[in-house]
Amino acid sequence: MDTIRGAKRNESRAAWIMVTPALLGLALTIALPFLIALVLSVTRYKLDTPLPVLFVGLEQFTRIFSDQSFLRALLNNLVFALVIVPVQTAAALALAMLLNRPLRVMPFFRTIFFLPVIFPMALVAIVWELIYAPGPNGLLNAFLSLVSFGNWQPVDFLNDPVWAMPAIMLLSLWQGVGFQMIIMLAGLQGIPRSLYEAAIIDGAGLWQQFFHITLPQMRNTIIFVALVTTILAFRLFDQVWILTQGGPNRATTTVIFETVRVVFKRQDVARGAAMSVVFFLVVLSITLIQHLYMKQHREVE
Amino acid sequence: MNFKKHHQPFFPELAKRSFLYLFLSIMLLVYIAPVLFMVVSSFKPDARVLSDGNSLCAFLPVAASLKNYHDVFSRIHFNRILFNSLFITGMIVAGGLLINSIAGYALARLQWKGRNLVLGLILAILVIPFESIAVPLFYQFSLIGWRDSYQVQIIPFLADAFSIYLFYSFFIGMPKELEEAARIDGAGPWKTFVFIIIPNSKPVFATVAVLTFLMRWGSYLWPLMVTTGETYRPLPVAMAAFESQVKLWGDIMAFGVMMVAPILIVFLVFQKWFVKGVAASDTGRKG
Image (tube, rainbow over the protein chains, first blue to last red):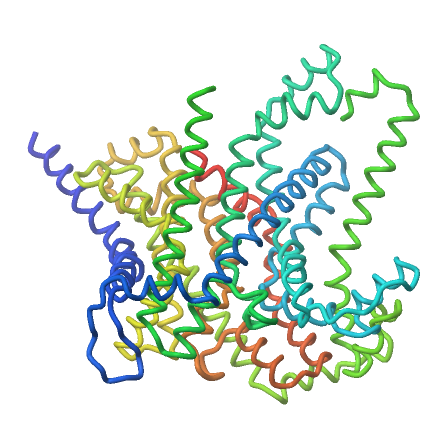
């Protein structure tokens, strides 16, 4: 009996020692800053001023929500998500379905479509800056001129209020779709082949197979991909910081861009913390909605 | 779909397959063109990079030389910056594997009070995106004077809730018999972990290593916030700074090629694990 109890105590002690480094790390670099964000967001405090920290209640939040730049940033993130999420999810599913065949060349295509995922976004942004070069010699302008038989008027994509956001979207799509494609591919490979075989015996065509087998079987994967893409859309920062600095005329500003700008350019940590809290609440609500949705469908099934 | 062959005449199958390959080839061009453009441009004189944009020369190495590569080394301390990236990423991968695997093991295989509570905490932390704590974290490290250093770029990323979760999911699926033999021989949790669990868990270690490497190598926001000069700057931040300073496209693309080369090598060698890692990011959270 004693040795068993001793072994148990030993096991318990080992377990605590094993989780302590991770718990300590998470506490100091996530939980603590998270609490600091909550505290700072109800104060007035700037990094470079010796003024004491003042409790101001929800003042930062009322200011944020009357700040035109921040509102525009929220709107931009929303528009970005509304375009990117359906397009990227559909494109990823389509590519995955095309590649989900036992042909020898498919791993090659998969590798190529996945390649941009390993590229740092900073690099992708800079390569695309060159692709978007203004004037008739810019690669994309020249290409569009070629396929429109010379009817394309060259555009300065990144400095044009209309084109800047679509330009950011396009390069993000190019970089990101391979990631979702791999997740979709894994999902597709989890669908039992017997379902398709039975459907074919019943005389189901390709579209019927897609709507009655692929889509229902892929539901949770698709919801997951849509969630991840939505959150990524709200995290949009690197390409905006490097390419447009939120411009022209706030056309490409984003929540994280505004947050970093407030902290960097105005040293306003309290405002930045309040913005971080808003950002967190947005991401949290997206996650909760997705969880409810997934749970509901699992219960229905 | 191979099995459709028996139900349909030969021709539509051939047409379908040609259409498939045509479509995939167009997509292939869309995906390859920017990469090829970058590589080819890195060997060209700066002026040609811009002027070649309107012809197929954009994708042909005309007037090629290694001058741009020499330029990068003469304009900035590229070796130092490459070392910074390798060192920071390497430390995070190595340290992260250690810290997160033992935590995942304790949560999955050991019996102890508080286990469910700790697991719940880690799952809750999984929801917090880094961007929402970047500002207070920056403030926190400014207070203790850690800005512009290696540790400020390494320590926040060692313990990682998602890695712990991946380890946890893998360990919990391992057969009990593996450990029981070791336990009967009197091995404690540590010995069991080192001699039984680790040798049987190569896939999850590889997956976590590759995912961590991928995320950290390209990270931009945090190093942008905490570094102020070349000394501790990693590649992505240095590249963006280089781009805004020199505006010489040949040099910039040469920098880009050298930045992506290490990860490209890692990718081509460990491709299987990249794909598994990404796929695991789904199955991990599905339940």
